[in-house]
Length: 252
Image (cartoon, rainbow, N blue to C red; front, side, top):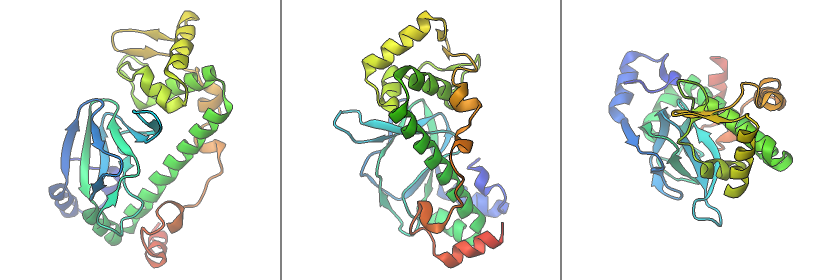
């Protein structure tokens, strides 16, 4: 049973012990993996498929703030407590399998192998960078540029064998993620189709490789924002104490 690259370097016995404590669950498209404000004692690691983080809003469906792809985690703000109330819902955007890992078990590994906690910090940092970039795009770009960028991003998040992205990602999801109305997204995509920039086949939706070059290929998200050295208080204020984090830094 494969769990995550973060634990690839620990002894086989430790990996086997974590496997016994964890569970692999399967979720249908649009099924809620964990609901907003639900109390849970688990960390969710996406093994396959794609999930989306949805925060409550005035609408019934809420707002999609980010996607959680393979090998990404959905977890609470701390590992110091054995459970937490989810601050957003995690919903399967496509058929998804997820490893459900007890917080207590992950905390034990992090304390024993500080490099795992550093890995979690780095994953959190990258997700924060992506979230900041998306908020910046929503605030500054036209609907066409924003939708184009999201369609290109989906080719990375939900790719098909023939290229493009999985057509089961609906325009409603794109609207939720873009901050636009469903009607705006539909109009923009129809316009792009009319100009030959978006095509569809039996498997997916296709866009040109350089569809979002000015925002994705030429200037990657990671390079468009200053790099931040992770600290204990950057992402998980109460995750570990400074002494534990200092030990982890020495082992880098």
